[in-house]
Image 1 (cartoon, rainbow, N blue to C red):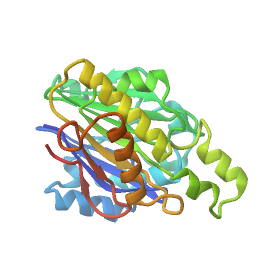
Image 2: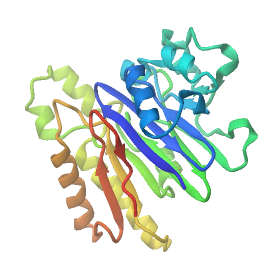
Image 3: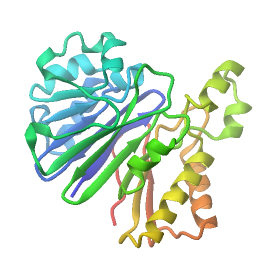
Length: 273
């Protein structure tokens, strides 16, 4: 079984822990290292237990503690795109032999372990070469989709068969457009290389649920909404907008899906069935 935990998710910093039967994976290191190590401890994990660190892109809210985590998670390999590695100083202190460069469309295995696969797909974001990731283990598939302005056909194809989704619901469009941000920043956020709105997230998730229904996939889709803007969103707004979209499409919480909203700070577990 794949266990997915958000340590903290917002425009201020992001990091997730993924645990399978035999592996521990960290996705992004945008929070203080002390916070990440503390969360591992709460989950009964030592930093040396971490097998892999997946980095989505070079923005500070995703790479803030790469240097410190590379020391503390001394056995972990770091997976990222060449564009990400070359466009931040964060990797300068990660031993070269522990950096694995990935491109969109690649699938790799940790230590040639046939029980777990890591897949990469391209995001649409204003970064050098951003990647989203899938993790497949024990017949389950998790996809992490944040920091993208659109869900392209390539993204959709990579994630629509996942049973667990960490999915961006960054902003409420009205809050963004009537908020205090300068207009160019608003345009950037809602643009094709920005972030997904609550409404966009609801529409995509409804489409994925429709595909699951058509293919008669068993069990509810497990959803964690993530990367909420502190200034332009609220957990209640994100949850309500997405659930309204899913309800309008004929889907019911508990029967067709489970849903949780990742907290800005602190541990949030992926909802269980």
